[in-house]
Length: 345
Ligand SMILES: [Zn+2]
Image (cartoon, rainbow, N blue to C red; front, side, top):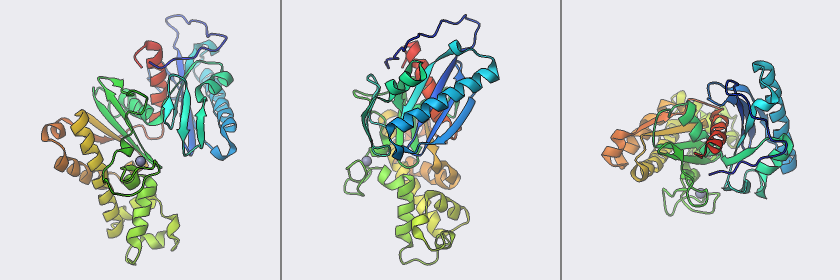
């Protein structure tokens, strides 16, 4: 169970009829998203995004988060008539690995932090109790609570962007493992002698199917191939190709881009087939920028899973896109805080 750190003064107890609110923070390498929800998760309030600007250092980032939290509280009070004492606390989602009990970010390449006491730094500034969990765990929980995986018992979530994160929900609860590492689907090996991954391992799923890996494979395919419209889309500057450029070219029926998307589907399908055979989930939710590729990605992805996983596991499992683009992490951060005070986290 995650420990909620109580700052002073302790928020006063509200009456039963009063709606209480939880704040969610989704800290990413590029953006911070923050907003509030009533305890029952019925709606998103005062949702906002700001660039992380991690090069300014950890202090500047947490100051920015604290300012965003203050604005969310003010806007929620103005919109709903809530009082300051109606805010229960803050759920924080952060890239990991983490030590949840201590509220520490142990290491994060994207932010350049080591052993950073993120939870307590936010508690000290926002004067509300807070919990810390992995960002992809939060996004998966968000889709389970309010999005595409509602009502499921066993859920695997994948967030595909700059990296590939993952989350596992078993019997309606996030599974964290022995030291909060569980769910790192992006760093499972799909080719034992394959591409080098940022984590130091070779052949991780992330090294093939993250946004930057998709762009890199497109650049490699372009070498010696002048047919693709990709070259023109970036005015010949291949360094400007992103995963997004590849999806757009694929939508315009560019053969090379379609091939890159099909390969991406094969890699993701391989990783997801492994998850099906280990966890036998009833739903897999695919989230993040890759979802823009739509059916061009999902159809061959489902076919690859069918080819590789045991049939009863495939038959029992839906593979779907997330339905909370941009806010799954915040919604799930709220849910992790809620679970911590209810003792189910
Ligand atoms: Zn890796």
